[in-house]
Image (cartoon, one colour):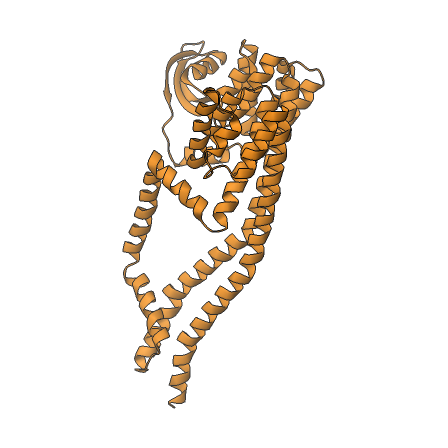
Length: 401
């Protein structure tokens, strides 16, 4: 949703200004006219710090979309018309999702289909979501499609929650180690350096190394910050290019443990989504093209686009997948071949998704189990180094007296 500033006249002819949120300027003008105002001009609102903070607060999460879909599916399955279900949702939901529900209701009451009304909120409802709703409308099974969508979103939310929850502990430990190290380098080591200098103490190699690193941080911190910011900006700019995104995604897959985990998490979501689309009546070509646009990894997206071209030429899906071992493991091609032969593609893709979920869950558990002793070893080595570098010179000083 975008924000627009408007200038308009009320019924008494007075000029009024304000802001309105809509998907486009034409929709914004329509909302202003609904207030009984005559539009003079509408412009996109300028971005500032307050609007940025407001946008962060109004961000709609996967949980909001999942809850909205489940409630809509329940009411439609109960026999309520779409407009009445949306009217109830508008009154029951709160926050940013209420505005979206109100806008969807306005569009549907104005004669638009549900899929078109949803497509005007691309940041909330992705291409997969919209394609599934559209297929449900065409097939007259919108109630079944919404129920499947709700199930899929809830599974996706649960799976992501497991992965994130398992990785929180290692992330906190790493951040804590970094913060402690920075505090030591900036505040503690310089004080000890002045102490050693006053006594003209002979310093061990470990202490000299620690003091040297501390001096680099103290003397060159502006340069280090510029270097860090420049590096992040350069990496971001490189990743925005097609070649850069492809290269970085390839490197992510090649990382030990983490790369394989990332791949299996991505394939679990991909196969679950493909299963949902195929089962809801979306053609396999559309399913592959839509998935290529939302998969989030250029290696897999490129493989999906090429597979779509191969399928369009008449080649089997399994053969098209087997041509890209860098993106699709052998088990996926093998299972897809079984699905093509038996005509149970939806069921087979669902089982493959479950296999990837189980494997990724096991890898996450193995990663967290391995991280804990690894972190303890690193902490032990760090503390030992600090003891040698800081305490040993103090001991030498005291032994001189």
